[in-house]
Image (cartoon, rainbow, N blue to C red; front, side):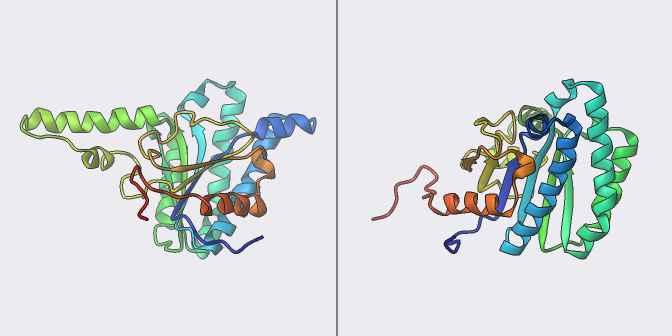
Length: 237
């Protein structure tokens, strides 16, 4: 493989295909989710070694609450167990963990664990890993708009800007994704970071998420390196 010429500051991944991966192997869907955690570990390690500063994962959307209750309960336990299990290794490897989304829908137990792990890894300066849990792009824009509306109500002369709204999103302080990867052959955003992905480069791969490892990441980065990002402007001659 050719040497990479451009490394994104922020890579985001829509992890798709856990259920199909399990079904193809005659396994229960939850076994696909378990194997998917290993993909997160390996992609995190590879991204950190490459110098990526932010790596985010769409782990659980607000729409996912509509899945069968046993699967939702399993996923919530998997999130809790994985964070607890990985906390020391994340800290030792300079990884800062952030959990973003509508946390009001999460249990008190899971929220307490999130607070503890975020606090323990807060000093991580090598890479920031972000898990979006109970998240939707529309919810994010609505909650940010409500904050701006409250400010406008207090000061009718105030004129909101795009930067003002961005500062109220849950991703405030985090650069917008340079590259978004979606696995399993699906080619849509699925209500994910709708505002933040305005100029993000997309790479879609047929690889199911549990099979997505370092080589698949490097292939996506090769595609990204070949892109010409102009942000609506004309390339200088």
